[in-house]
Amino acid sequence: MPTVMDAIIHAMIDFRKEILDNLQLSLEYHTEQLEEIKHHMNYKMKELRDEMNRKLDQKQNSPSFPIQGLKNQTNASLDKLRDLTKEIQKETKRLSSESFLQINRIGQTVDVMYSMSLFGGGWKVFLHRIDGSVNFYQNLTMYKTGFGNIYGEHWLGLEKLHLMTKSGSHELLVVVEDFEGSSKYALYDEFKTGTNEEKFKLIVGNYSGTAGDSLAYLNGSHFSTFDQDSEVYENFNYAESLNGAWWFKDNLYSHLNGVYHKNGSHTDFGVFWETFRGVSYSLKSATMMFRTHASKNEV
Image 1 (cartoon, one colour):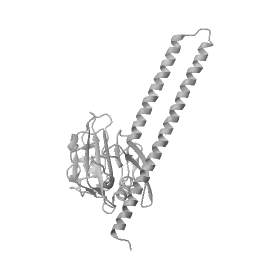
Image 2 (cartoon, rainbow, N blue to C red; image 1 turned 180 degrees about the horizontal axis):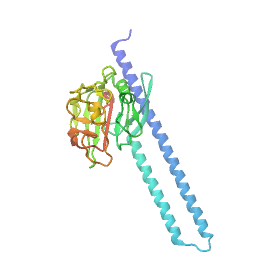
Image 3 (cartoon, rainbow, N blue to C red; image 1 turned 60 degrees about the vertical axis):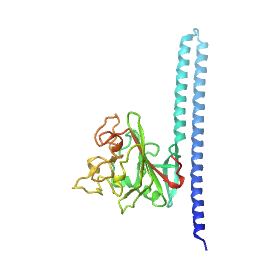
Image 4 (cartoon, rainbow, N blue to C red; image 1 turned 60 degrees about the horizontal axis):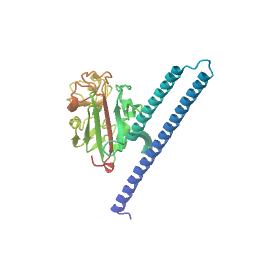
């Protein structure tokens, strides 16, 4: 009959296998992406060489051979090559910090953005705001299932979030950035969300970080949308009034699903984290992500 120690050993083996599988998927993804970049670069280089050779042949066979015109065309081609190089460098930098994997939970395949550059990596992203390209004023059904582009702005989905955090111990990382280039973080040593019947109740632990704690006050609150006000305060619907959705309470400390202001106007009640820039400052970017404690590295 299996002992408790046997069960623990098997659980550890299963967990390590899952980590290795995820790392293998990450390696395969990066390899494919780098091969695509290499192929794209080679193709563009060949295009530029062919174009330059063709124009050189045309000029050499013409009655007059304007050197200055050829120099201008060569400089234009070199500018294109420099732009391509910058694009490749930018893409390589992105790939070094993020990967996009598929993980299985309860027989369900979930596409997840992974952040690999912060505090040891392994963070699964469930909220990503960067440019206002996605409308976050959505109903409860959309917030349950998720919306947006996994490669850009998106909300992963409350149902997926519950399935992925209900077992084991997890920690939460929030990263916020203002339009002046300052980036701060808030780390919570516990994180999970409740079931649909519990209205996806928020559970967070102790705070540490540089952004200030604008979430612990909301611990135990329920998720609200304009069509389901889970926290009723004198018949006031925060989600509807703020054009967003969040774990609201009677005081506003944070709302990262608020209206995004592209031009950097610091409009009241946009995307805010009160202890960082206050409720009247709408942030440039905000990301929420979690990972299991077992994958935690020293900060």
